[in-house]
Length: 208
Length: 208
DNA sequence: CAAATATTGTGATTATATTCACAATATAAA
DNA sequence: TTTATATTGTGAATATAATCACAATATTTG
Ligand SMILES: NC(=O)c1ccc[n+]([C@@H]2O[C@H](COP(=O)([O-])OP(=O)(O)OC[C@H]3O[C@@H](n4cnc5c(N)ncnc54)[C@H](O)[C@@H]3O)[C@@H](O)[C@H]2O)c1
Ligand SMILES: NC(=O)c1ccc[n+]([C@@H]2O[C@H](COP(=O)([O-])OP(=O)(O)OC[C@H]3O[C@@H](n4cnc5c(N)ncnc54)[C@H](O)[C@@H]3O)[C@@H](O)[C@H]2O)c1
Image (cartoon, rainbow over all chains, first blue to last red; front, side):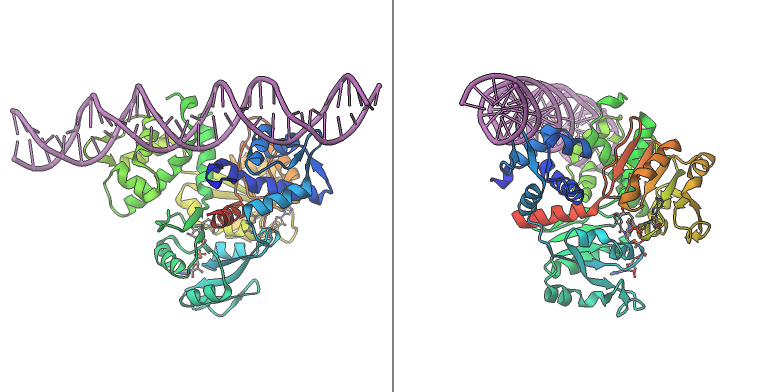
């Protein structure tokens, strides 16, 4: 299973497959064909079968894929633990929406620590979780063995926060600011910017 | 400017360029080279020049790009109006964070109508904006000439909301639910799911 | 049990995107 | 003014991803 040969595009789709499989399980489905999976996700059946083939053979000819088995295999492949600990920097507008979001728990992620600089927030509880001072971040992150950080602070403060995050030994970052993060080697970040997607929609409605 | 020949990957990057150019302008920069743009966005300079070349020649050899001029050109290319009207379905946790998000206004998008089914919310104001009943959506959307809808309702209700949105004449949708939208032709949607990105981070930290 | 069939898994092909390599040229320096 | 130089813009080459076409085969049917 030579990791380096697996297309990036494939890896990005694995989460989609898991998502749809969970939904099928919630509907008590036992088996699904690549064609049905493809239709419900807006992909092609070949694409799905090829994606899976990089990791092994999971299907049964003439029948399709055992939904539970395939989900279990994908979890193993992706190495998604059932208890991924997150910490959140910035307990504002967005931060609070994230704290109230049930989708994290459902998919094995939980926010275990919140950090802010606002003295009115430090020490208080948000959605049942204590807000710490940013100064305590390094200590708390190491103590709780947190591996992933979410950045939801104002754009201007992202550099200082990034430094703290890296010093805390975090290697994975989910970034909600508009800034592109300048990262040292070994650290990986993904950014979320839905205004970009709005602009894209705008572009297509304009050029079509 | 043959639209059909422009790579999709190029189009997706145009927003990034605009974002960085706005930042440079805020720092009073007049000129920028493709190399610097590339470094600050984690791309290559060739990629940026090639992207721009699909639309024309905007640079000056030996100097680089006039920041203001390039931004203006990109706005024209993307056809992003300065007053893109949005409507929001679902005034909950996430919906309220979006209502409080200043990034929309800054980039020419404004939420002009909110719709919900919760009787405790209908008629009330959120972030200074009135919440309407979903039943009024079609009328309000047409009257206000809104072109883009944001879906932030619970996953289970997405199908009924989608129907209403389409009946209202909306062609562009930004979807925050976990569901993949089954769309008729002529309608375009982009989905936002950051749990997927967390899983991706998890995958890479696991396989590296 | 044999034949028919649906569906997977995959090598070959095509399409899309990135990178290379360098000509063109505007600017700055001599 | 002439020369040197930095940077753009772009065809050609390479890399990556999607699709095609079909062999393999488990299951179902007769
Ligand atoms: N609200 C949204 O829907 C939304 C959407 C997308 C992206 N964003 C981005 O997320 C970020 C936060 O947006 P918001 O709307 O939540 O802003 P906000 O002002 O409501 O919240 C920011 C929070 O960060 C805290 N903070 C400030 N400096 C800090 C620091 N150095 N360390 C830790 N905490 C610090 C503030 O005290 C505040 O609690 C921004 O970059 C914004 O562009 C927001
Ligand atoms: N909170 C987050 O950070 C977050 C992040 C990503 C995605 N999401 C997704 O966004 C959606 C909403 O999440 P949330 O946390 O805001 O949930 P929420 O329960 O806080 O809010 C949902 C809102 O939608 C309203 N609603 C219910 N049925 C409706 C209908 N048929 N038409 C219009 N409105 C209706 C509810 O009254 C409520 O106000 C979910 O699909 C969730 O998965 C949320």
